[in-house]
Image (tube, rainbow, N blue to C red; front, top):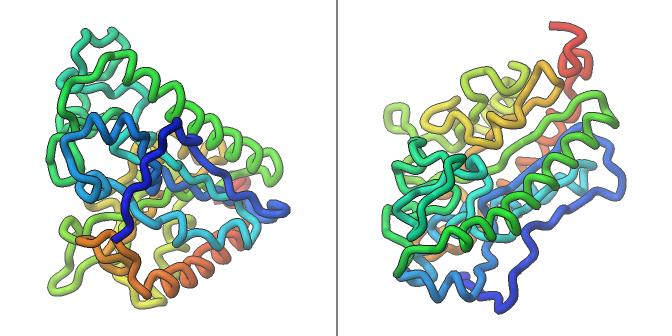
Length: 294
């Protein structure tokens, strides 16, 4: 079992794995695979370490680790999703988490907040409450200042730099899904869910290309159900501005033991398959993605 290693000092918010030279108009981001838990956060939680880790998209950055080797940057959040979630609006805040009155700019009524999964989550993925006590508003805002905003500033810079160099950018937001939440077709369960917010956040060819590559490898792929794309997909995916964003959700059963939070040997084969996804996306017609043709 991979245990939590608590950090006595605030960990870095993220790491950027850069290619020696960026040769592909792609950016990969893994917002939920961080596993560096601040010691004070662990002390404030009522949950054991393995329960906290169930909210992670564990090892997803490893699955896409080929991207820098192939010429595209990979951004990896180091902090855990249970601590602060960068795939939310910056201030989707849950009144039940805080002892202070929330500011008027806070979004307290989103479906994510109602589920306990706002920017500062109240519960982990299985619905168990995280905290022994309510947080001060300053604690929450400090997390947003020190972790959330630096992650998004790094992502924004990667997207803009890629767009400046190539004329457009394809952003792949990388996630995993619990095996018990995967959609099914008959006796078969989906290995991947591709989310493009029902065709609004990237050119159709982006989703089609990833789907074709994965189908050719005998993976069952579905679109937008039950994951159509989160904040990152909606916020950054603007095809009219030549930024195309696709969310990829991977069934954890393929590559990890979900009960023990350990890698399966199949993770290496899955990571190898992602090389073909990167190659296919990097080979798309720039004219289509630049909006010069339909």
